[in-house]
Length: 344
Image (cartoon, rainbow, N blue to C red; front, side):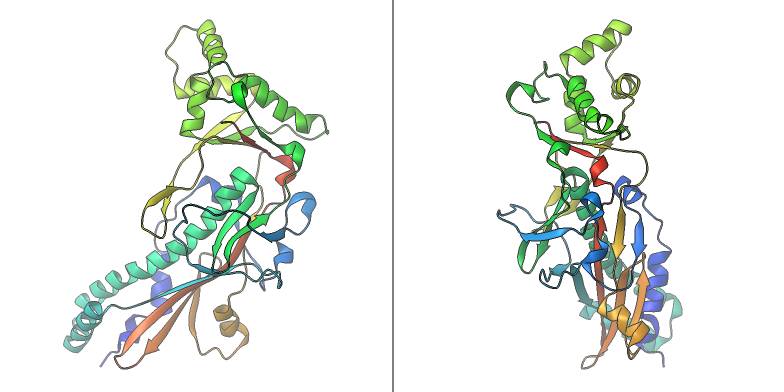
């Protein structure tokens, strides 16, 4: 008679997950995936291509995005290790056993797909953690990681001349703010050093709204053609005026309380060059290392470059526990070509 593990195993789970349609996002296009052997932090680069520094955060974070539990050993200089597992719930287990006993292949596959959805959620939870790191890096040049040790700041070393916080009347929410002048000043930081001018800007819809309501920009656009101000008109204006392409970003994940929070903060603007900025680096998890170099007894498969899925058969009652783990962190080799602004 077929056993549960004949259908609930990592080969079947990974095949199911890999067949899901990919979701292309800006953050992943800027930080494409890369696999490395090991887990050493020395592979993760920041300003001037130097290894990044880790330090304990000096402030608390009000909300924590949904993420896999993390353990970070600062002294060991290793990338964070995220893992989470789930058991087949009792109802699904009983239904699957009944289907196995009846040799009903169609019902077995239907139940297996239902169970696989839970494993997909685990993998998506791993993706959330990497995406969250990339988005924070894009906006701040540093990362705030949820870990068992508390809040960790990953400092990629943004140069002082590559960041600015606007104050009082200079804030972009003030209609008379010199938005064009600000962007030109930030671009010239690089031009004056003989570097290429950043040609792309990343911001949220709310932040882009400040540009749409700016007095000087509205006047100049309407002076060219008395029209209704639209997003596309403003984007075309910035492209012609400053050779700047604007990407308006959005997206949410869920915190530990199950409440949605945004990946990107309002009131932040990042100027970036053409091309990729770094890499989403995945190290070797203990489960993967065992599969390749160890006993090989673990039922482990790798999906999406570096996410390990491990299935463990449990007895009394017979069930399967499935664990998802990853060791990962983005590198940011081109951080010195980016400008980070807080505009409100």
